[in-house]
Amino acid sequence: MYYLKIFLVALLFIQSSGCVGQAKYTESNFEVKGVCGMCEHRIENALDLKGIKLADWDLESKKLRVIFKNSMYTELEIHEILAAVGHATDKVKVTKTAYDKLHKCCKYE
Image (tube, rainbow, N blue to C red; front, top):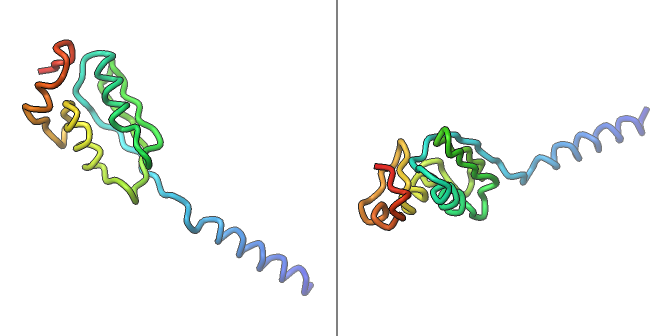
């Protein structure tokens, strides 16, 4: 019985310590303006950063699925990164300077 208690306490300790330090990720889905495969490439490459586990933009739906480490980024920062490369979202508008740098086939407005 004594060894069973020690085993159970050790098992609980191992399980609880396994959770400590694990990264917490957030998944977000939102619209990003774009019109072509070049846009898709630019959007996904802009989010090819440490702490971003997945960035997948769908050309047909214009929706981005992104999974990011919430200790490194906020959702608003993800929107700002995309606007900086010329792609507006529902939360952040693109600057004229960033939009003007897009290739002519990528102009969505």
